[in-house]
Length: 378
Image (tube, rainbow, N blue to C red; front, side, top):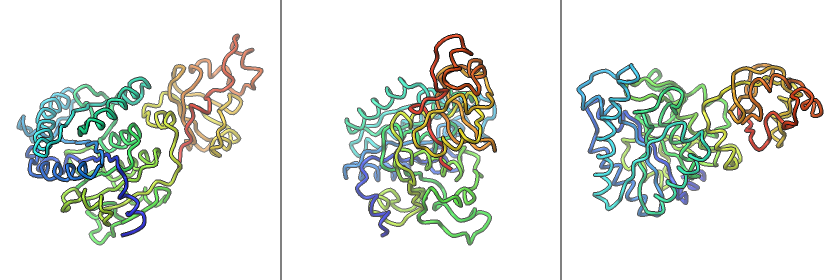
């Protein structure tokens, strides 16, 4: 048992994500035997004093089985209708399984708007924490029945990671149909070696992660690696493991060397900055000169001033999320902007005393204040 695995043992708040390929019996509806097994393991974790939030995929896949569909629908309204049918069976299956162990479950459906809006974000956090205090297992899924591209989180790996940030969980566990992260895609290179532990700062990880080959889910190893990076914002580690491995969750709780452990490489962000970083819908772009890019990349708490901005893209409003690009096109930061796009263009390159002259009124001296700015980790 490694030191890093040993440090997982005292973790007391987990987010567990289980993918479609595991929850469903290869497109033949929900795998109730597997759900019963995971429920028993989660009940054992709860018995050890671990708080668990479960992120479960499978609504669309279950809906396909109930409707007799052999192929995943492509049109948005068809997907939403299929998810609505399947969500009924999914939450019922988990509720029934947990009842057998004396546990209560709660359903939470989320969209990107629940993360992007500060008040809704705080309300969601309060609900989660109260459910955990009650000893309830929240069962979370993206609200596919109403989500459109503009408000979609994209996949449940990302949803799980954002939930980690929301409730400040200690550990993200992603159960999948692979044994973990390999040095190469094991479906193409059978002799590829499993990575047992890695630091998220290791740049080689991105090249090792492949896309999704399945027909039921939306996420592959790249989304899982990205989810681990998001979870690391609050200091959480991530374990990617095969969900069909015997007692996979209990092995992780014992510190066993199962799957891939991805260790956070950054200092945890403050709560408000985690919320900003968790917003996925960028509304515009600020192009920086070399000096401004260097200052922001230093991550020493500086604000972005108009003097360091050379161009503006997009039609954003005050308070929207914008990304900040270095001259070479690399994103160095993102944050909530103090001006709308037209105002931002009028004060490009302006020094502090010039802002009022160009706008005709006294505005903020910063385009993006340091409290609303998050440096992008590469």
